[in-house]
Image 1: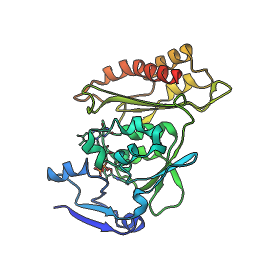
Image 2: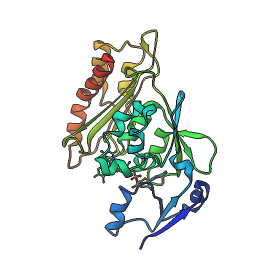
Image 3: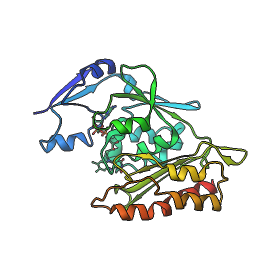
Image 4: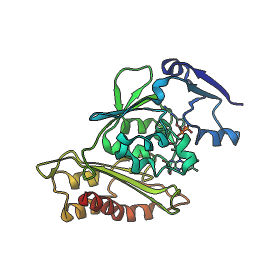
Length: 266
Ligand SMILES: Cc1cc2nc3c(=O)[nH]c(=O)nc-3n(C[C@H](O)[C@H](O)[C@H](O)COP(=O)(O)OP(=O)(O)OC[C@H]3O[C@@H](n4cnc5c(N)ncnc54)[C@H](O)[C@@H]3O)c2cc1C
């Protein structure tokens, strides 16, 4: 049997998390397990308004972890995130599925987390001070800390940030892979390249081979070809019903090239 406990504040919810408990976001993943009789013993929820708060102005936007994909799509100031949110499931999933839940949804899910890692987003943990890089949290997926909000640096243009999801069924299929790139430039040269992959390992992760190939270069055909050649370096994708590990590694460079060429066009 699963019990549901609701707390007025996130700090109280964080204190109530313990063995056998899972935090309930939109429930799009959790409720499948609960309905199958395979869910957690305790579901912890919070009615804290901070969970659904959106601060969309300025160079860093702050979104409560309970903000849904549909709300992101309704917010004009979050246009840079629309191409990502639009790719998460169908309308029902987007209406319920939250940012916090996407961080810890199992393979092959986590497309939004891929974009967040590329952007260098940070997670504010409930009941704790400061914020931690989202990519760090990906290594703690087995026992996720309670995330209150995400702080996301705003890219300056479509040339600086891009996201691509590859699925077999369109428009609602899950990822064969997803990839995002954040390529800030100084004097025409890429400085601080960040590439992130989804469905290419046990959790969304950085693509360090591609990042090294992009760093210091101009976003042109030669740099893109170098990055595509290094795309699969360090990645160890799983084999599942959608694709084999071999296939995922083979096509990673093709899709990274497509994404980078789109960003080059601006
Ligand atoms: C038909 C279908 C299609 C889907 N398509 C996609 C897709 O294309 N791309 C994709 O990425 N995902 C997809 N998903 C997976 C899922 O719907 C999304 O990832 C969604 O964002 C999960 O959010 P949620 O709030 O519903 O998570 P929940 O089910 O509430 O929770 C998922 C996990 O995250 C944890 N969690 C939730 N909130 C927090 C928090 N604030 N802090 C810490 N832990 C938390 C939960 O404890 C649980 O372990 C799909 C799901 C379905 C059923």
